[in-house]
Image 1 (cartoon, rainbow, N blue to C red):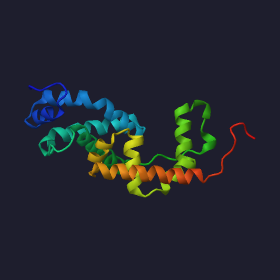
Image 2: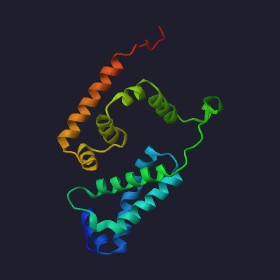
Image 3: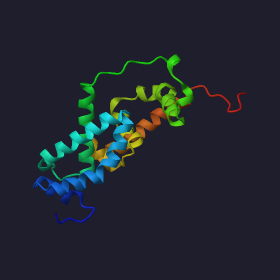
Image 4: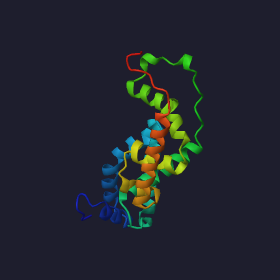
Length: 187
């Protein structure tokens, strides 16, 4: 395989030609960030590892299906997310645990913040957004994608992603500003 080290398109073309070493390069290059982002969506590392394996098997089988009109990373992310969603559709949902059974002393600070976001005012404000606005926010804020990456992933023009992100932030701002506030000193 003769490729520049950072040329994902050339590496993917080599994978499409049957080069197993090229697949290894792609796996080594993209598994770390894919794993982190998938774990943000679903916290079971075992399931995420299975999804990653499925993702790269799909890449091996379907590398020739990449149209070349976007970044390889965005294409890989779209495959990984679809594989995760598919896996979760067939995965038995965990039994809910009551709050009285949770030991909050073992919860990390990040877990507590995410729980308050999910179940607090911000979570409610996010759920009030239209799916189009919420999807853009999830891609750009929670998944940390750039506007350009989010546009490719969501199959939208960059301008549409920017305008939806702006509208979503404004809607959240209006929703959260309307909530009663308390003084930080408890007064």
